[in-house]
Length: 323
Image (tube, rainbow, N blue to C red; front, side, top):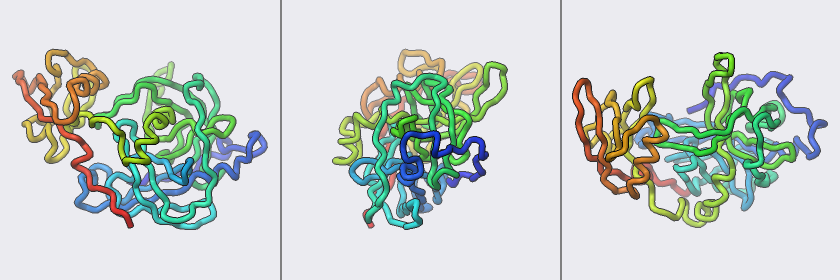
């Protein structure tokens, strides 16, 4: 899952003189990340076996990135701003937030970025979105939205940050405030309509506030210390009339229960579903992983009820291997 790199226009690249901190030094805290995943890995077919992006040096000598970049990785390599290449070990994954921690297996010798407060960001605020590679891989951007984001892969952020213009190689990028504090990590690129109906590219950024309450658990345990959410192993999307099953994780709970691509999800238990966020919230409210969830579906002209024995998504993933 390697992003197609495009040059950032010079007019969007930051100028060191515009910042009150040492911009070039701080950007050395963003490293290049490359991960290789076995062909037999559960996520290989959807996320690929060669993944690349960025990671951010944080307190404790760790590197913060997005989980999809290193999930089930057999090898992880970190490239610093001065060109040194270090192996890394996937220390922790949090599928709820989408964050991952990588432990460098050697001295990173990169500045550790301090955490800021993304809750204070206002729409229209200026920020910097930076990938590995220094100023030529950083771009000035704005906060253009703060709202709920529901992903088709059983993922939900209550208060995602949306930035534009969009960074062309976004995965694991650092969202920095005017004081150089880390406000979030770039996750996705998508298109949204502007007030005139034009399609605008923007990035989805996971706010760092999602990390802080669970950072201690991730460092100590490798995951958050609470019961896992129920996972169905389905990919769902909204259309004009319904929430529809777009695909199924091979061997996952939904496939084993007989759910098919194209099924329309009408209700979870007795609660009718009208959107993707509502679907995930209702499933998660049923109990922890291992809970039986009842879905009411429409298939062609028929209605049917299917009981799905949910699972912990982590049990389907290959455990990271210490090198």
